[in-house]
Length: 279
Ligand SMILES: C[S@@+](CC[C@H](N)C(=O)[O-])C[C@H]1O[C@@H](n2cnc3c(N)ncnc32)[C@H](O)[C@@H]1O
Image (cartoon, rainbow, N blue to C red; front, side, top):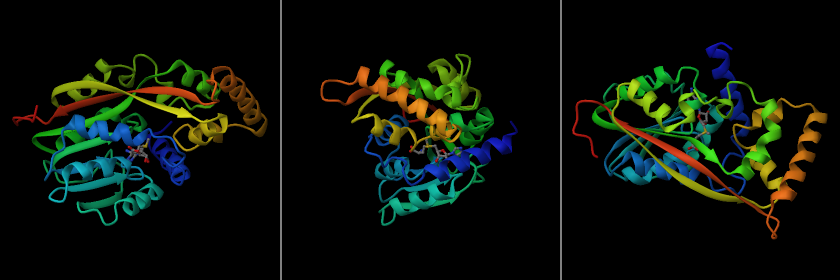
């Protein structure tokens, strides 16, 4: 698939889920973003940029860290997401600005930020290596870049998602094979170091959550990037997947009827060369 076609597909996908993203009673994106902001060491007064800011979950965490003396610029491809991010941070004591833009070509002044984050974004990019190299250039010497990506998830969650796999496009991050940079700590470290960052380090965190029942999981699944799989099914296929999901959920759920799951999150952080860093 051509690069422009991939980018247009991602924009359509996130416009479609913008209303429900992070709004179905599953606490996942906020703890992931908070962990990333901590890992990158964003501090009061920092000028920060949120690349692929979505509906503002990660921008909120960044604004809380940089405080009223700092500033946050958020970029996203999806106009619907950007609209929600701007609304979510309306009245923030931090100076904030949101723009619809392809984060691969951020078109921001070089060396103008102390911190840059991209939470759960880099695996959507057709040219991740090129984009990350441009992100490093946005930082002042010693400024910090942090990326969050998905590590392994619990076997129960994987079992629930299994019937969706045949409908995922090959470009989906969950279809990335073991050679992909997104499949390992080393792969991500190589991506960030290859983009020109120094002192690259990876940490990880496990986020735990639960689905109340199978419908809750379906609502979640349709509110995130996985929505693409649901959109690619015929009505018959959807009803087969739903039957399978009900069966799997019933087998795995605890006595209360809910299903606890976990997701490991990888934080890869590096610094722009030429500075003391913050270590
Ligand atoms: C999983 S969401 C993460 C959003 C947010 N960072 C968070 O922590 O919730 C991925 C976001 O990346 C955005 N995105 C994907 N490719 C992009 C690109 N090339 N430029 C800008 N945004 C992009 C999508 O539109 C979507 O809002």
